[in-house]
Length: 306
Image (cartoon, rainbow, N blue to C red; front, side, top):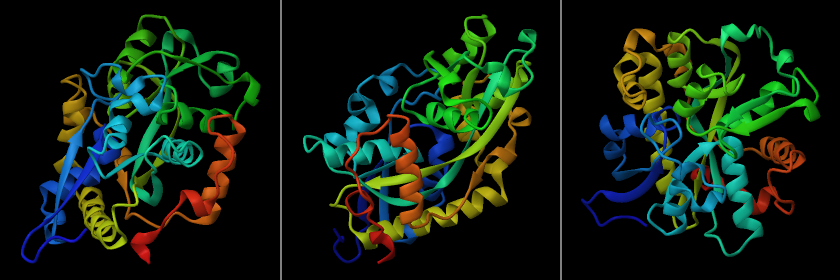
């Protein structure tokens, strides 16, 4: 899908929340994509982390959520989400031919922070106190998957409970109203919660994965990933310069001084290895979050490095 000589090659990529897509935004705005001969259009869709977002990113059928449906309908060529979310979406396109195929094409740049947060008035000081206590998440998104990963290190799987409580803003409001005892949040909402006096029990970085259809060739993906690698380096060197993307999503609830910039961690995209696929597919399968039948060969395509 190369462009005529002298013209920039157009690529359409979809995004939801800035913390997951910051290298894409920076690569576009700093001209790193253009340096690679690309004109990357970023289609912004409602995400659970946007202050004024609705529930279009939280529909029960993941393929009817705005980002996924934009890919299904051919409006974009490529997208990224939390590693287990991409695993679910890629696997389900393998086992269900009615969906537009999507392959895992890289381990992505953004190492997004997630945290389990509670209200100090509840006198909860450690994850073990959340045994059999529902933790508010949005299903099949990073707040769900990362919560399971964090909690299973402290209590038995059958003791881990969750409930749907809307967007990050809605979850935090439910916590402060006493409707739930703990919530799973990503940045900038962890920093918002801390400013409002909430307690972080446990947090972890959660890596993105990149997905694309067969139409997007390896050399084009390689150009995109080189640009994102430059963007990751720029963010790590000067996170303050790019923090405004996250502050905007918080809707004025925090200022730069309130945002914990060390949580903005990014790295160059990398091939998605067989070991990583096996570990994460089997883990996701063990929770009943994906169907059986996927293999490394039919789900992963590291064509950017071939």
